[in-house]
Image (cartoon, rainbow, N blue to C red; front, side):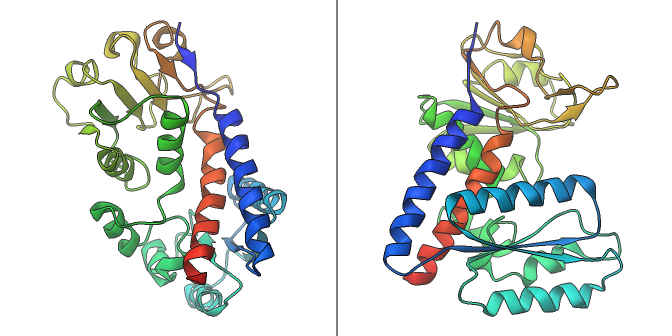
Length: 282
C-alpha cells in the first residue's frame, strides 16, 4: 500500500512558515500585499477568491478583492490592472480566470507587471522558468514540487513522466522537474504506447482531466504518483485522473483527490506574494 501524501498537512506547514516570514518582514516595515480581480459571477471563481482572501488574512498578508460586473469592458479591467501595477503596497496581482468570453485573457495577463504576476502566467515569467531564472512559479506546478520534496522523494536523476501538456500545469511542471535534475518526458493524447512510457516513471504526474485514467498496470511498482485531476462523476463525487484504489496498491507514494495537490495551490500563491514583496524591497 502506497504512502498517502497529505496535501492538507503539507499546505498547513507551508502556511505556518509563510506567517512567520510575514511577521519578520513587518518588523522591517514590509507588509506583502495581494490584489485579486474577479469579473462576473462564476460560482467556482467566487469560492476560489473567497478562499484566497481568507488564506491571506490568516497569513498576515494585505488582501484586496476587486469585483467587476460581467458586462465590464476589457478597457476597464486593463485600467484597473495598470493602477494596481503602480501601487507600491500591492506586490502581487491575480486576475481570476476564466474571464468572460468578450475579454482577451492573454492581453490581460500580459498587462500585469511581470514582477507582480503571482500566477506566473505572463510570457516573461514563462521565459524565466524556461531558463531557470525565476522567483515566481505557477502555483499548482510549484505545489507539486513541494509535495514531492517534503515527502522525502528525491527528484534528481529520477525518470519523471508528465501526462498532459497544458500551459498551466503540464509544461511548467516539466520545466521545474528538469531544474531539479529530473529526466523528464511529457506525454499527451498523441503519445504512442503511453503505458510503456508511464511504466518507466519513478515520478508520474497525471494532469489530463480524464477521470481514473491512470490504472495500476500503467504504474511502476514503488513510483511516486501525483494526481492533479479534479473530475466530477455522474453521482456527484469528485475523483482524480488516477484510479486511486488500484494504483495505491502498486505505487510507493500517491496523492489523494481531494486533499492532495489542491490545498497546495493557495499556499504557493501566498509564497509567491511574499517572494514578490521581498524582490520589490531589494
